[in-house]
Image (cartoon, rainbow, N blue to C red; front, side):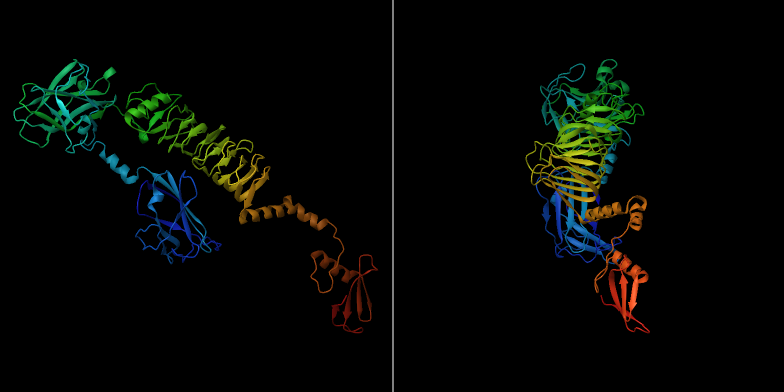
Length: 612
């Protein structure tokens, strides 16, 4: 069972279905309790070193969480369904977590895989709802700079005033104000805003006040057409400490173009102020509207098309879904500017990682990615065509094929991946888990424990299909849990360790690694032997019917073989002599006695019994 649960969730109850292993119809196992004999539970965080962590099972009331709690849901209407109280520690600190229940009599083991996500549906709904909340459509942009240290506008206006806090306090109306105190009875302060190259500022929204009555500050917007400052309004002084909301319309000329593309500058200035006159800004925003119908950063991703993309790094212009950038370097620049960590790579594109990619999502369709030796901790790569190269960290690699050049790293989770090359371990920092992957050919579809790795490793390859070669299992405690079906080749470089095999496999063990078969695999192997005996299209059965048997007779009172029975029946009907009450059956040569029978009467026999 696979679940998506927000990382750090506490007091989480999950429902699990436990099958009755003695049932032939997949029925649920009823009657289990937290203290049932031999019932046990474990969890393991993805990439964690060492053995799984034991969970102390406990009593639990249905619907009320208890750490390790285990209780039957409804044995009558939902047989086999149980509630389980997941320990808080099993749901934090990794990309995913495995929870395993086992041990009770006639209980099939139950595995739950939990994907630990950053945002659940509620979070995403809230975030989407917050977009443009103040204006019902426009996007709100907070200040990204001011002239506290140096001029930021094209006229490089110098600041006048003494600040408390910084411009970053003006993003939210939370009572934490950016205060500009007068210096020499004057204030001159500029805030800069970056709204993107495909937008225009529509309005200025201010929440704040000037705390001295009759001390008014002029509000200016920079006119990029003049160019120069334009008076657009006044922030009136008042004997007040409460916010005054001021909204002033902006014109297209107040948004920069060319080298000032997407830049808006707002200035508060006055001279001749009273002593101790302060400008108090709780929030200042530019409300901006789109100039075109760009899809934008669809799915929250910067879009890359190395075949047909357009050069450029302008935020909200380049790298959008309908105007992808053509360079991976440009995509990274754009992502940093707009604050996203998701890249969507177009069909046929090829990228090489050249910087740390931790906590990043790379998705797309049939693209090629070279890892380039970069860190990929908590990185997700999905729906590519080919991946290869060396990496560090612990990534999730899904729906993307391992290329002929192979991949090398300290551990990863691979899912639904074709192996066209080798997966090579170079450290024991994390764990390798391959699920629902498949091999392409026996020569290249390989998992290599790594000749240079000195410590023991435990590797899980589950629901695998097709050929796979296992190399360099050279530590006594190396373990491979392999399930699925196909052709397993253990290379000569695998000199020790244990492979736990389940499913239908043909095995070639050229090394000295121990292979432990589960009961199903052993039975399947026996069936395959029988199938060989029968032969193609029943040829084996035909041979049985046309091959002469060796003459033999069971001793009196001993169960015969099928051949012995056939000879007894044949000879008692075709080769015999009767003398008084003695019935003598002859062998095939017609003279040698095969066995004898005693008649109850020489004249009128009604029964006979073997006596020799």
